[in-house]
Length: 322
Ligand code: DGY
Image 1 (cartoon, rainbow, N blue to C red):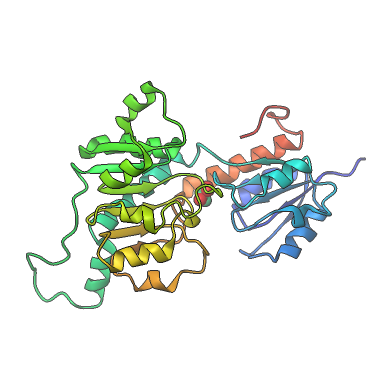
Image 2 (cartoon, rainbow, N blue to C red; image 1 turned 60 degrees about the vertical axis):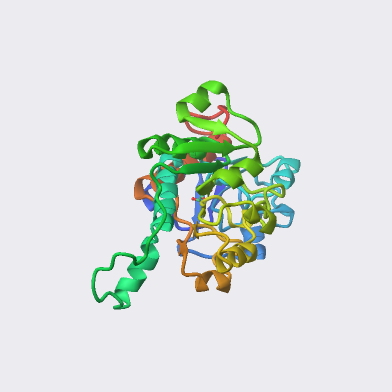
């Protein structure tokens, strides 16, 4: 009997979902959440025909140098900036991600974070828990309105569009900027108008970042971009931390040039820029935008399907993966 392909699962995911891999492969699964050393990833990949990984696992030329049997990497996530795609493709290794299944959940979270930011919900809760509330007061913790304001969306892929569709219920004007303008029918359906990057910065009352991270989007929101925003505006980032220059953001908040920020992602996560922790008007969450139970299960399930198909098994064998 020929040897079964070997698969490495880099993080503990949902055991019952991962178990589907057992039907086709010898599975070696990590049992505790681990920040694997780069050499440990290389060692695991050397033994594997396929791997199921997450954004915690950077994989580049060094990790695949000795991985002569490796044919496919299934990333659990829609973002894949942890993977060096040119290096993988040069080595003939197929990479897949998990779009669609997380779109609506991530859009919900973008809204939650934007609203918490605009209405100072974290700050208010901290204040309450710290025992500062003596009596109801007319003018404490006043925030900015969301309804009726101008929503700016930077990055108008699936998640950006899902965020835009929700804005109609809040009577907002929605503006967006994207690498390429959407077809008119999609703009109509999302009730969103295309504007230049600078116009988006200048007009948005609430700017939300939903674009992919790449060398081109690194620090796209820098001091110069922040200077173009309105002083009463808020910034919400559910994309990738590296898109925002965090020190420039702290400067803008400290100097009253921006009202507030909501961040789910960070440049050096899980390490936080200590200046962010000092900001009263910043809502910080630990990269959980797609984190509903059902969606995280769906992401793992899609990644499992992708890996099975990419290694030539299951009902989707031979079909193009996500
Ligand atoms: C993604 O899918 O890229 C998220 O950031 C991780 O859930």
